[in-house]
Length: 143
Image 1 (tube, rainbow, N blue to C red):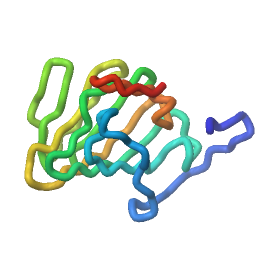
Image 2 (tube, helix red, strand yellow):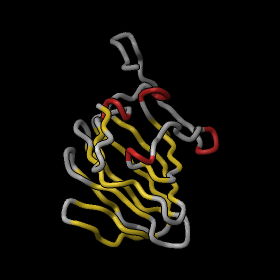
Image 3 (cartoon, rainbow, N blue to C red):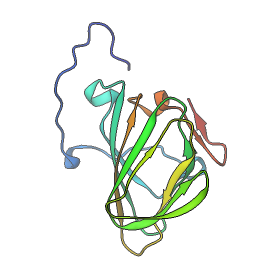
Image 4 (cartoon, rainbow, N blue to C red):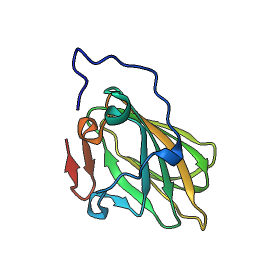
């Protein structure tokens, strides 16, 4: 639901404990054993140009290489380590890494450790998965 001209944006606050995990994310579309929460998005905060998320990747979990057509993405590794996928292959990633991926570029992350990885991430330019546009390397696509 995109805000219409009568929607007044207001400051918004939530808490991780009050935000449900996103359902319907399919492994065939690149979402492998991920726990995803949309903390600020179009649905909850009427934010059509920004989405902020929290993701926990248990050992072996991954978000396959994917790209967005209508938004830029950033992520910050809050806890843990693994491998980030780029257009050039793979690179180690660890706690404290801050990554920016402009729209249209392939990216992803895999937890290669024995502990959970926690990522804070966000999209600039879209407030929902549908608005962001999404394509995974194996052909999963929404836009």
